[in-house]
View (tube, rainbow, N blue to C red):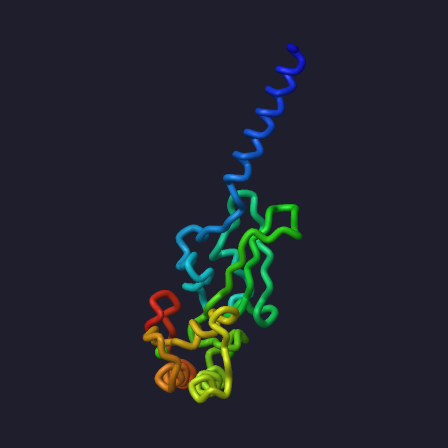
Length: 176
Ligand SMILES: [Ca+2]
Ligand SMILES: [Ca+2]
């Protein structure tokens, strides 16, 4: 009888440890005092800089996570870059997925230029489709002035960035 009680106690402790471990799911957080914004509603990451080749200075894994990053335009981590959150050492199990948004860079090549402006105009004229369910990061990147419209005004901001060397505020979504 004592052996059975002891065995039940061991099983109980084991299950308790497992449940505690499960409560601390792998995740990621803003690195230090960086400008990163993590949007957990739409699973987007912004507040970064154009043309980054690494996100190490912007996000950090927590809860035993490892971050598997699929770059938008290798070696660049711009719009469309996928951040898969996995348990460290268990690469087949993805806990959550986020995508990077660089406002103005709608093709994720690390530049904000006429190509991006052209794509925004194409979208406005129904010559290009971005599925909100699967390609939200591109829609967000295209809405350069943050008014929920995707039009020639946004394309104009992109031209300004390229030709007048203006910078795009990657945190507030407002063009500077
Ligand atoms: Ca671009
Ligand atoms: Ca807009």
